[in-house]
Amino acid sequence: MSELDGGGFSVQKTVIGVDFGTESGRAVVVDVRSGAILAAHVTPYPHGVLDEVLPTGEQLGDNWALQHPEDYLTVLKTSIPKVLQISKVSPETVIGIGIDFTSCTMLPVNAEGAPLCLLPMFEHRPHSWPKLWKHHSAAEEAQDVTQLAAARQESFLPLYGGAISTEWMIPKILQVLRSDPKVYEASNRFVEAGDWVTAQLTGNFVRNRSAAGFKAMWTETGPPDSEFFAELDPRLQHIMCTKLRGKVVPVGSVAGHLVESLAQATGLCPGIPVAAAAVDAFAAVPGAGVAQPGTMVLAMGTSTCHMVLSEELHMVEGITGVVKDGILPSFYGYEAGQAAVGDIFNWFLENMVPDSYIEHARANKMSVFDLLETKASDLTPGESGLVALDWWNGNRSILGDAHLSGMMVGLTLSTKTEEMYRALIEATAFGTRKIVERFVESGVEINKLVACGGLPGKNKMLMQIYADVTGRKISTPAVDESTALGAAILAAASAGLKLGGYDSVTEAIHQMSPHRVVEFHPIQKNVERYNELYEVYCVLHDTFGQGSPELMHRLRKLRELTRKS
Image (cartoon, rainbow, N blue to C red; front, side, top):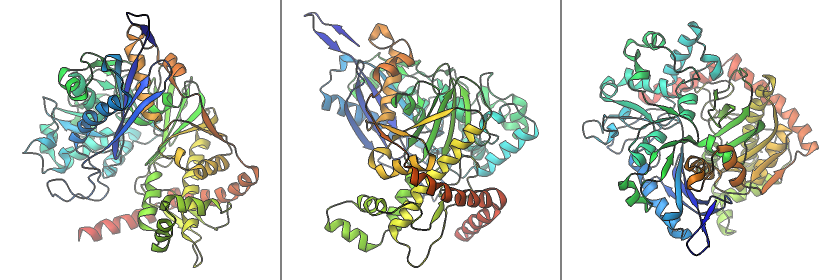
């Protein structure tokens, strides 16, 4: 949108979108009329992911993943001024800010909203630090929540596929309560990191509907009743109206307005609207231009989230949830996911590539990633005789078991590095096919796939494999920052028509989303061969995930006991 200045010339209106990921945050400045990204900037988190020791030196256990809250503010104070500088956009033209954040990434704060981990009396206590979405050490607590909900026949449980994830808010809070009651007692609130950032920007604390609904068991009719929490632990009886209190606001609404201190730190004008935070994967839906049912969006990065919209409510066992208005207004939003995708590929690159490949890549002035993709692209489906299970970080959907682990079958003395690499890519595609099939079996329409995030634009082979394995056309938006663009689109909707934005999220999507896409179509001969490999994958999936999951559980337990001793 634009308006005329005093000389009759059109004044460009812009919005800022900030995407907080696992390892870094990025900001974009976007033209409100066209949706063009005028500039983008990435700020790596200075402290990274804390998965071994705290900054104060305390050791962390297995499956821990924490962050440093000051890193979030570093992103705002670094990347926003940078995109203004790069784009030469005047701050006066910026009509709003939108943010998205990984979820459930949560932190305990005091009455003033300060993270407990930044206070000297708590900085040495691991449970005072923000727990990242992939913090998986609350698996026992998640199991307890699920079993109690099932025993009580709680109506909310089927909405979450029949299981509560270890990644979510209540299991993480329960872990804090059981492991470090002093941190629990000192916490005035437990907050989603996205809501904490909007509170820093606005001075106003609200809960975004995306995270409250999908990660904290908040439904259309409200949260679970106090009796459920009292039975879980008497100290949790009033958790929803005390430590999880706060107004729940919808996607695309205004959380508040930019305060003077953050305006000065970012170079923006005070008082502009700040949109309610969105779950990072869900922001990819508007960022990919999807505003209608029948299209599954794959937000592919360290993990993959699978989102689809529907006008009807269906109970889908094994997914991570369905929430009315949880992704976009007026639709039931469904989410499923794989707990590791890009993380698996990174693990392989860091641990399984021989020196000869690294030297070859260096000699040819190419990255190891490019070398592996080139070699793996020369292989045909089934040529390596390998099938893997994509459970390096447990299984989120459709099994919901964080204690499962990765597996590869078919290795021989002649197996090559690129064959293993391709098998891992195929495994993640098989995992996505499992999820698609579960949705379709349950009555949720899926006609096509749209992939966005950090992986699709880097790896054409990956996208072709996904098209062949699922037997569906897959398209990727021709933009690198779909998630941050989605946050910017929500900012334009929250600003409203009067400020130069839009009066609905749907209108903002139609006007600002990318119109150019790259398409990948299934190759029939590959589809047929992958159907054979998928049969093997399904046998492994059902055997080790459902028939005998205790085998992987025992190995993980043995590892933990050995490390402790």
